[in-house]
Amino acid sequence: MVKAGSDSTFRAAAGVPDTVVSRKVESDPHCTKTGSVPDLAAEGDVNLSPRRKAWQAAHVGPNARAMLARDGAAFLHQSLSTPCLDALAEAEGIWLTDADGRRTMDFHGNNVHQVGYRHPRVLAAVQEALGTLPFSPRRFANRYATELAERLGELAPDPLGKVLFAPGGTLAIGMALKLARVATGRHKTVSLWDSFHGASLDAISIGGEAVFRKGMGPLLPGAEHAPPPDPRDCRFGCGGTCNLRCAEYVAYMLDKEEDVAAVIVETVRCTDVQIPPPDYYRILRDACDRHGSLLILDEVPIALGRTGRMFAFEHYGVVPDMVVLGKGLGGAVFPLAALIARRDLDVAADRALGHYTHEKSSVGCAAGLATLDVIAGEGLCERSRRLGERALDRMRELKARHALVRDVRGLGLLLGIELARADGTPARAEADAAMYECLARGLSFKVGQGNVLALSPPLVIAERDLDAAFGILDEALTAVAAGAPP
Figure 1 (spheres, helix red, strand yellow):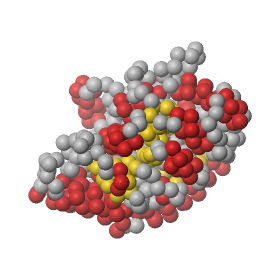
Figure 2 (tube, one colour; figure 1 turned 120 degrees about the vertical axis):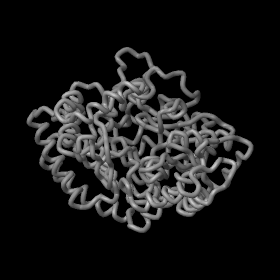
Figure 3 (tube, one colour; figure 1 turned 90 degrees about the vertical axis):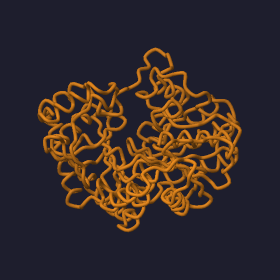
């Protein structure tokens, strides 16, 4: 383990004297070094792009066009949403249906759809709550919220067990940051470049994506960043196989700073499915323990069975001090997130960590309880592992067939296909084209980090539909390689 010392000492030991520093310059839009240009299209599906307009001209029908016109006139415009791509009329199971009847398999879903859309058990629970207790003011307990908090506390391993709810994952991240400050008496954080923890000012301060940070400063003080565990773009010369120098650098930062309240990491970065090696979190856990810093894991998009476990950190044999989950917790019906913390971190009774109007939503928590019932009753964690292996096999076949595919990876049904050109450079234009080719054929997914096709199907997907989706991907990659228009 690298101990405290000068930055130059550590970087020299890493064998790459300048690249860690230059990574910060490249990723931080507030840096002014000449030639530093953040990639604002790395998140994919950027509205107003020429390819998007061409796709809309070819595939959006009159009913959807009319709705898009109304939508664009009514909403403030912002990147990655309004103006929108298409207009929806229905969602059920794994399927989206637009206003003109076009059906699309949803392998994106903003990661809310672990149990699929309109699951009858979730709908029945919501309807029951609506018919009896449609709203519960914060000062009152209600059985739905209490039972869901109890269930989550039981599912999480010791010493986790105390819960707070919020209407969204970004807000739950904010609660975790507040609790870390109260519990430690410190304010500094260490998080990773290229990470995403939400779009509010506090969340983008610890996040690392330029599309959210550019021009938004000043951000939270004390928000330090480190390179992520990405062997394809390693700043420590790992050569394609992670040597854990990235984890040791985080440990070194704690040695150097000494007053860090929390290390905040996405357990698996879902935007491009970067899966840290087994010992990554052991190093972070040990470093946090030595320095009295809290380890906060952000599993907002990937908990609840997505990776084949209820919590993704279960793959690593460590327990964080806090874990944040959301998105799928509301059963693809209600916005709901949760912070689960160590029981002994219940130290802020005189503070307002959340204080949200819908903090103990009876309807949202009813949806959450039903979601947990579906995950357990239908064996969705095991199903995610089994179908994930099937999907990896299909992705390896794509890699063998298509020169554009540089790497495939997955954990459960969190799947990534990385595209690169023959010279090794990221195939960003090709990834964008592949997405629109797939949309034209009835498959929706996200492009992450500019060149990774990130696939997150509902855990209830039928095997035949999973196979059909990879057939679409095969056709789309063939078309892109041939230079076909979207």
